[in-house]
Amino acid sequence: MSFLVLANVEKTYGDGTRAVRGIDLSIEKGELVVLLGPSGCGKTTTLRMIAGLELATGGSIRMDDNDVTLVRPSRRDVGMVFQFYALYPHLTVRENIGFPLRAAGGAPKDIRNRVDEIAARMDLVKFLSSYPKQLSGGDQQKVSLARAIIRHPAVYLMDEPLGTLDADQRLAMRELIRAEQLASKVTTIYVTHDQEEAMSLADRIVVMEGGRIRQVGTPAEVYDHPADLFVATFVGSPGMNFIPGEVAEERGSPFFSSKSGQVRIDVPRPSRFGQATLGIRCEHLHEDPRGPIAGHVLTEEYLGNASNVHLHTEVGPLIMRTDSVSKRARGADLRLRLDQTQISLFDASTEQRL
Ligand code: ATP
Image 1: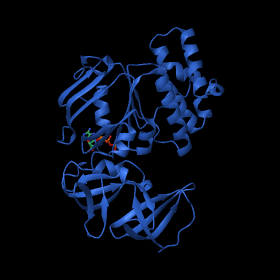
Image 2: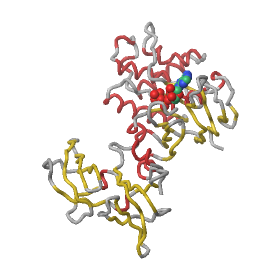
Image 3: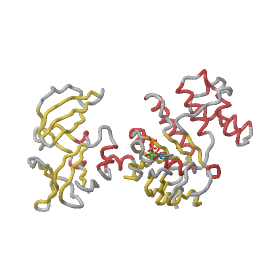
Image 4: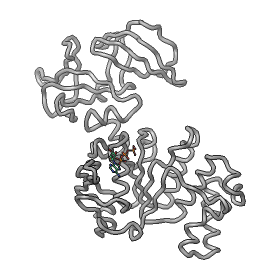
């Protein structure tokens, strides 16, 4: 049995808000699972139910083969890491980091060793005798994180722990969290609305929307084989390109024809023929004089080592990623080819992957 099992878990708040609508999720010991989704999709509520800070109004939660659905937070071995962690201003960095172990009655020598170890790993040794106010905001947040992860509970629950940091610090802290989690092997559930953070951290991503799970998969599965149009749009920057149309078959070969009718593309065999939306990532669109789609350049977004070229085409707006950074003239005509092995097809009415 998996280490953490949510079965048909529901949360309806007192005011009638259905924040979580029957989710099933199994998490293995040592996994780092990211709950990803837009604001209000129920990520924090799910995390708080696992912590015991909110009680589920339906379904059950099992941890390490025990039913914890109604168990108090203090009786669940979880460590919560939030966005803001207040440090104790009158304690040194060493005392702050070691605080949870001292509170748990650890031996001074063990605490000292563990603080030294974690400070070394997080590049905080030089601050150990300083007080929080002597540190920059980013370093204070690192100290907070060190304090949060010094203890090894059965589960870490992290709710947007990098929310207030700038881009560079987020990147560094992300690597740090991953390294520490891999070393400690503590099962971790991490909440974010940032799909890039999710992709870089997760063993598996749980994409949520409207209190429901849309897809559970490795970052590559979610990116390459999105389960529906929502996931295809939400994951990836930019989201997937879409072309409305229809999939049919001629002499045993499936093909897609655009709504406008003039563009025909060979596609992998779908599970069903009929009205469909073709999805293609921007890096799988290529400029090719013999490609099936005609269009022209609207704007080019310069990314340093690549460009996103925004196009107006006969099948609607598309974005193409190019490695070359040469500026294309606005209005320049071009033709496009799709990498056939990278095409996704979705049912036009259910929006599910075909
Ligand atoms: P965010 O990233 O903005 O925190 P989230 O995905 O974590 O969003 P939740 O905080 O779980 O979403 O909220 C899910 C829904 O439940 C939202 O509609 C929210 O307004 C509502 N909600 C959250 N807490 C309560 C509460 N205590 N009482 C009533 N409704 C609540």
